[in-house]
Length: 358
Image (cartoon, rainbow, N blue to C red):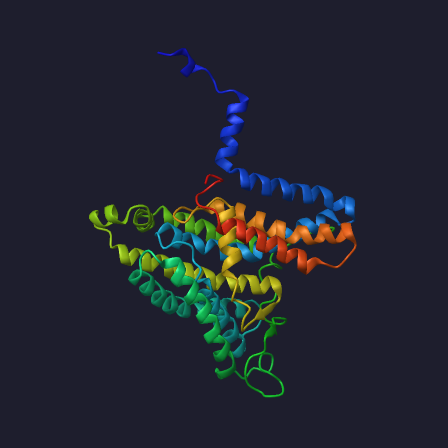
């Protein structure tokens, strides 16, 4: 036997393997984010406040990114039809307010009401994707965009009457932005919050995400979850093994749509407002980009990819405008935010495989 095979790997070899495993692009993004955190106190931005901002934005968006996982595992690709689930959540939230629920109960009822909408829309969406295997992501984009445009008309026509939601001068048609004060504003964020000086951690929102992430992880390790992963990896083998390929794909789409519905409700409770009409139009792109930056590919994703990607994406989007504004002493936060977010979306959507390998 060759003695070289028994020699331990050098530090350089282990370092190169670690970088290859983590992905060089992700490493660069993580290093840039770390640099922004280090620079923040030197340009006058409070470090603990910036940590709080990043964690808060992570908690708002993490479930929307988690919604990508089921469809990736089943081979349906990245869910550009995420607005369907978001619309289900918006319907749940607005109907909950219309029915007069307040406080934490309005959030619970919003999830309950959104669920049948998510199941029906997800089932229809899944049926469509089963008919056009191979072109899922292209069709999903059309479905997502067209559903938002259709709902722009429906928000004006649906019979809502709550004075907190309808246009005051007409008495009908929902407003563009609806305040959640008195309803489910911060209902999760204010559950067991950690407040130390300028540091504020929304413990409840993070716990809620952790429960859903664990449930998704556990599901993927069940017999059904394993069958779903097999369909995504090799549908021919899965079919030969007796797995109903179309049924598994349909289930993954329904799961993804429901998670998107819950995700937008969690986003709203942290943000404090419901935004309708064109607001959901581009919400799929940051979620898709986050999970790709986290190391997922079009046919493989994990909970770790969700956590890493969401933190990196939201960290860059939050920190870049803050640090840059403090450095140049000009209010260009929105311009810089758009450049940072769209730049990362462009990077993520041009990646081919996981990690940083092309």
